[in-house]
Image (cartoon, rainbow, N blue to C red; front, side):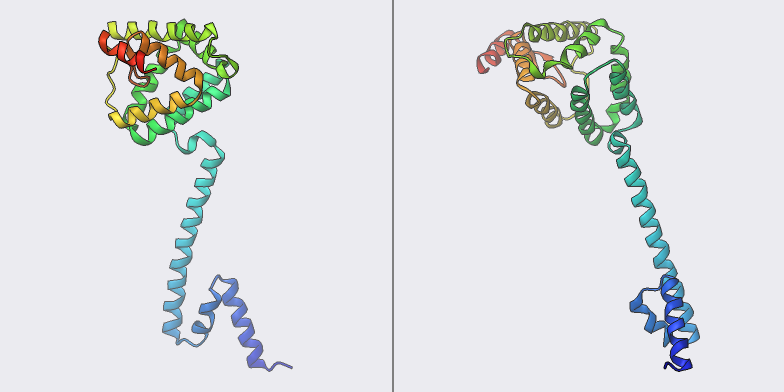
Length: 225
């Protein structure tokens, strides 16, 4: 049978443990003087508050994970992607565009809001709506599908208007980053690669920052494909 002192010691251990004192520190506190005990409790309290902050941060991160696109994208991009969904754009294409925006938001965050504002304006253009409609459905196309040429035609019409308005090639993104975005687009499907090739044959280079190239250079690009 336990004596009174043993029972008291067990109660003290249980009380400290329930208060959040790590078991490794319990013995230390039980043997401490009154001043040492107070200092030890304050130190443990600071550690607990730090742990609470860490757990709260984790909860916020988990909530953002549950929100999906909010994790890596500003609200303006999330709203734009939701607008695409509202227009009936296929989710596979929305995901591809989302991934490109994640790269932009990470590498060139200062460009996002201005580009998004322009993208919203572009959705008033019937050509852009038709372009999104076609791009939503490319997964099952053959490389000789005539709609691929229609996509190239739509893109080129927009490029011509951009050049005439002095807007082509106007972003400030670094060349390596632009190359990365272009590579991601081309690698997304053989159809995308074919569209880029058609545009190069017509004298346009790039996708993220498309530029008109001289006739001789355009011929070289076409030969390379």
